[in-house]
Amino acid sequence: RKEVEQDPGPFNVPEGATVAFNCTYSNSASQSFFWYRQDCRKEPKLLMSVYSSGNEDGRFTAQLNRASQYISLLIRDSKLSDSATYLCAEDTGRRALTFGSGTRLQVQP
Amino acid sequence: DVKVTQSSRYLVKRTGEKVFLECVQDMDHENMFWYRQDPGLGLRLIYFSYDVKMKEKGDIPEGYSVSREKKERFSLILESASTNQTSMYLCASSLRGADYEQYFGPGTRLTVT
Image 1 (tube, one colour):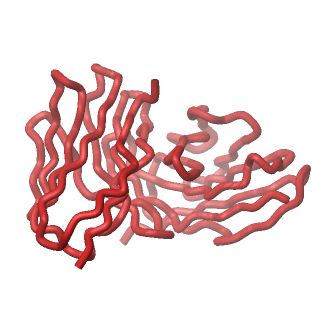
Image 2 (cartoon, each protein chain N blue to C red; image 1 turned 45 degrees about the horizontal axis):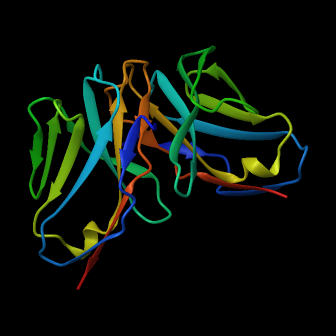
């Protein structure tokens, strides 16, 4: 089983919609998690970190559910510019992150 | 502003050639990483380095080696390129500790024919 799993999508949503992605992880000892955003043909960039208390930044909310071993990313009031691939990553304590394969979001006008 | 640069955006090499991919960062980061990204497989860690001359294998080190002689530079070496190493290669750097933001370079699209 892959350590970090994501639904590849694509998630096709209209502008203004609320959309949520989940990412499941297998290492129950992992302490911190991250969401990275990757635009088409560009490099990934950090969107937000996810710790036990969750995190919110404007229209974006990330949550951690330790009991079910998943993290989520909620995007409210979707914009066309939110179209991208969203990668989750897990810090398993080995000094490097393990990334999922990404979820593609397409926001349509 | 952190900058991570990679020596080439596109590279075409022949099977059996030795290939060097160079990565340079300008923010004095201790950690540097090499990933490859393939459709459906996401980012997979090849090697990382947490200090000069230090390296650790990632998840898919077979067929690759690395060199870190200076803090700002991390090289990925394909000793004898094979067609299954055709991929997008991404370098990243971060401060010490896995919970620091990783900054990625623009990537090198390597094609091995």
